[in-house]
Length: 307
Image 1 (cartoon, rainbow, N blue to C red):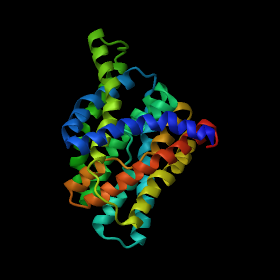
Image 2: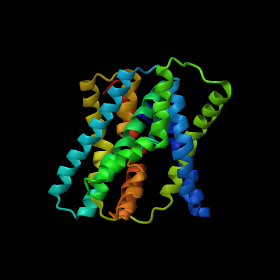
Image 3: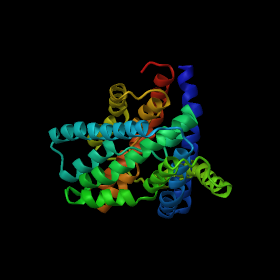
């Protein structure tokens, strides 16, 4: 019990404290999270992605293994969640929103921070790959679920290919493929500084976004979505890691990321495609508030070799 408490204090309290600053700023000064989100997506996240991958020793085969496993994880969770929700005979908008909440996980501002604190820089590099794969699925499968139109997948995939974080990934591997191992000092220092800012700013952004929360309702749907997100997904990840041969720091990052709460981008999709924004906020807030407990237990199980 003492070890579990230390994991919570050392890994979760810093994350919650920084996110709490964002929450306070939103409630006290009504700061709009959109400009911060725009900066994060176009500047800080690409810098984090590029710097982490360029300075890593990850091979193309290992990258594809972890990237592909993340895609399989998301498809597995989405399929199981869909079957359960269909059995509950919910409205189409509620089904789409709850389904999104079950497989669109916060691999960015929450997941990267937790993996970095709990397992260090090597695991963080793998967590970035999982984050990029999650982003790809969010803006393809996520858009399809939210819009319920097959024709949207092509456009969504094109948007992913044009997204700055994805372009940063391509650039990092292109330079490594050309045998370039060092960047000019000004570029290296600039990207490193942007990388260092990105994670705390992600957490402030999370707090700003959670500051928009209003009230709880539809507890049955919340229970379904949050159960898949926090409890079922990590154990699916354990099985996939064994099947796909993911080991070491990559395994730690993969399983930990699988247990992250629902991503705030769920609100964006719910708003854009007119599903159920209030339900999306409920799923995000509930999973985020419960995740310090579930993720602390997950980290404990991983650190002690229990799973």
